[in-house]
Length: 102
Image (tube, rainbow, N blue to C red; front, side, top):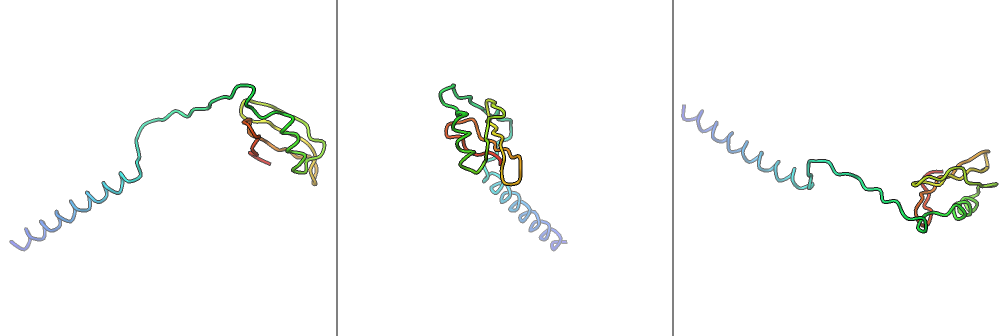
């Protein structure tokens, strides 16, 4: 009977040690439950990707007869012709016109 209590006590100590180890590991990733709202700051007119710069960048990337297709607060779409026919390049509407998709 004493052997049974000893085994139960050892199992309880191991279980408590495992629970405390998983708690430390789980809190290591700095997870905070809840909702965080994403912010999209729209830049004033002077700090956006100019359509002229987007067309120039598209031409430098090999797009012929490049022209502006669409301008939204988040992106500038340039249409033209590439090596295999009609092609489209999408730039972010932020300063410097970084490439989003080709």
